[in-house]
Length: 70
Image 1 (cartoon, rainbow, N blue to C red):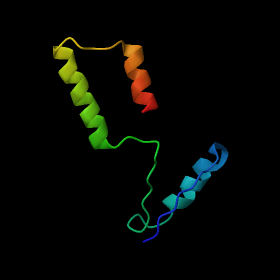
Image 2: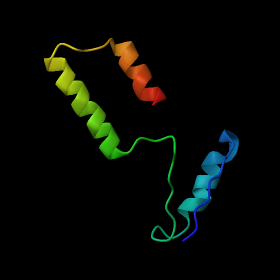
Image 3: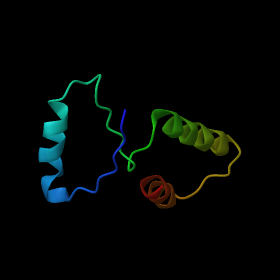
């Protein structure tokens, strides 16, 4: 198994992903560094819910900024 790191311009990203999707799913795994894993998102939501009951919330704009920039 080989691992590559690519930087792909936005103007051709969709075309590139179309090429990748034609390959067998059990042979190629796409790992997007810009995405949040399900487990990480679940943990962030749980932490937020725990803080609500303790009245330790933050402004909604700040919350969205943190989520989008993390």
